[in-house]
Image 1 (cartoon, rainbow, N blue to C red):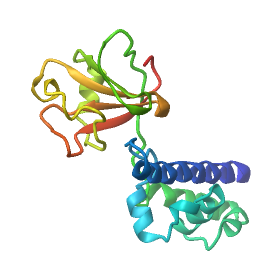
Image 2: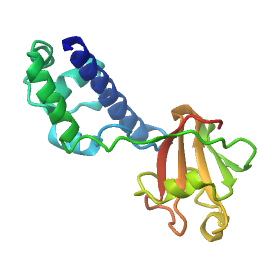
Image 3: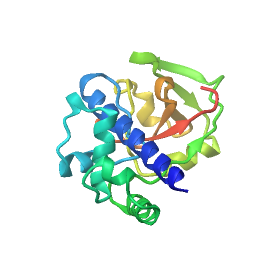
Length: 193
């Protein structure tokens, strides 16, 4: 059981590392993707995080501090009951994002209306039930590469899906919302893109 708890914290540290590096990369490149596991803004405002020098080891140390340990060493040397308790703490703290459902949507065969940088592209899709469900969620992302496509703002018959193969992610445009607000919902999609 102890090894399972340690493995759980190692996985969470990797998730934290990837979310913070992704958030930092957003500021330097054209990609805008939502973190998947942690509220990076909240973490960075409460802890001193140097994104230029952020490593997996630093993510482990930061995760340990987030759950009340002074260091990663203290965490991995904690008792089984302490680890179980801290696991519960981690799942209830404000830094954790709600676990996102992973969608399996076949998007092959729909009309490609735009291509963006980094391999992203935009599809015009029918009102698939999965896309309707996603569009009803709280917006959490920008819709990439499409500010100048007027069709996106007026068409209520279709959903426009920004496909980001690099991140196994899609962003579904919320009908009626316009750039530059957050007006899309980003979710993981491991179906055919």
